[in-house]
Length: 120
Image 1: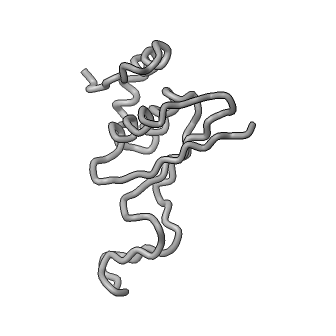
Image 2: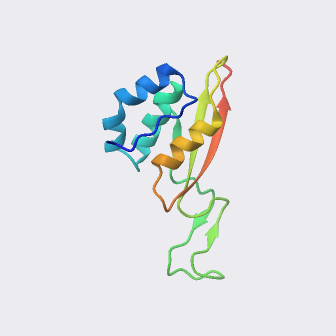
């Protein structure tokens, strides 16, 4: 009913959590809140989502510096960065997290994923 497709490789616990939160996840689909919660349901840790990760300046559509839509920095327009801090001893499947992001993100956006192993 919610076009929620649990990954066959997920543990039973992960699938149960997903089903339990399916309605709420669908309600927030396409938002940073929904994406963060979906990743948290799978990993057990709250990810950090930076939807304005530009290091440098971004000029508006009517600005003139070389060409229109010039970006000074290292991140393209409509790109967000997801960092998942993984606790010591825990493991996550990066492909499953990428699948979650692809399912949750707005179609016009791109993303970068960082899996960060925590020391403590």
